[in-house]
Length: 209
Image 1 (cartoon, rainbow, N blue to C red):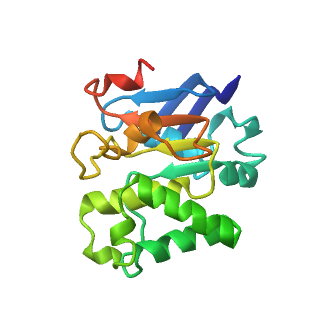
Image 2: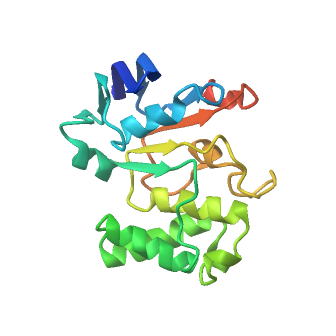
Image 3: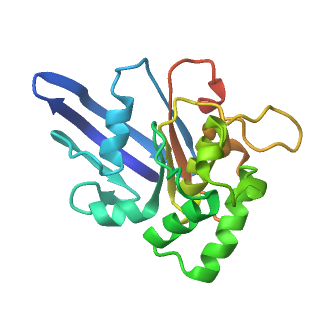
């Protein structure tokens, strides 16, 4: 079953065609790598699929829902790790997580358990009560990833260009990059599919799973 379906998806900004009649499907349990150089339209495509941009032409369905007609329902079913950091550096990591949980209406007791779980996944438990302004870039990206998982999304969108999370590869270590979470994620109720943008074929595990 296709969990993402696009047909002739197009986005035009003035005289610039950023996305030109793109069609593809992503199946359940699939990690889908969106490969292309800077300026190829990867972020614009993700912004349409996550309802941040309205398509100029074409259609798309996410978890069987139309991204235009059912935009609010789609937003409740997806997680997004954006290209640019959005965590609030004036709050602690824990406060950022609770804010995200409230925005997605995760019940308090459930949120408490989930926050503990995802902070453990990204190795931020020890730093949870520190202000984000004291975090390294990799730690901020890890917190962004944890936020994207807080509400049990059906699909995880990673527009991270495979940025590193500041963790070396090694036995027992959490994912090195945000996209690795699709392969290594051991939390409960993990996403049914993952779509991630990458700039080169240096990360071939996206294509062979």
